[in-house]
Length: 257
Image 1 (cartoon, helix red, strand yellow):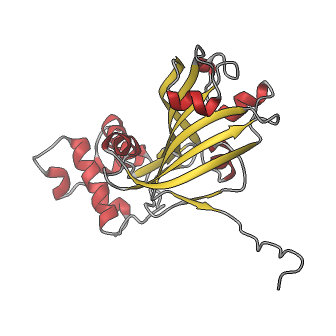
Image 2 (cartoon, one colour; image 1 turned 180 degrees about the vertical axis):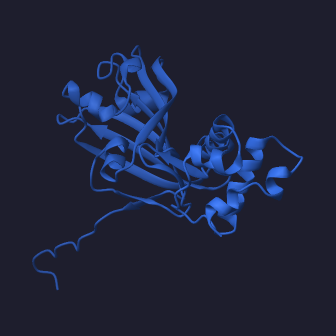
């Protein structure tokens, strides 16, 4: 059966329970669950779905928008809507210091930021220690939900000395790109990675279930002169990321056998 035949009004459309957009959502989800719509399969355009079902464009758009919010489908600008591949994972090298924006751009994916927090605050003891702040110093905090092609990928919570980012509300996209404008882009970093089970607040933001596997990464980044530029605590979806490191055999010292 083709997707066009599957979406034609039948018993699913004439059901008496639920709004029309909910019925359409359930029909598309049924197509995914039964294997008619496979991972990465394209969906008809909204106008085509409206023509097939007799629903209004507004109703179709609402149904598609909620499927995007649930992480069931992804909408790619200029390409259309596609079924999300739940097994799709992003490989991230541990040997290169890059931003999330740069990582996604290299893969042809569009990154977006949804702001959770941004401004100047009194530092916590952890931030004072990590950033070598004075007792009377403030700290810049930026917290973002990072998405790629509409799919939530990570929650980033970064802390910086205020002189490196005097106006945090002016930051619109890549933090490293913004720091680079003033010659303060980090050149090296230390990272600590640990496995966690996601709590309810973070799971809700990442559109997964509480208790699902995640990765917690603490990064301390440094400027060329050795000054700490950034202290970041990030939470990554465990089903979306794989971190890869290249290892080389250590050279033997002279005199060893």
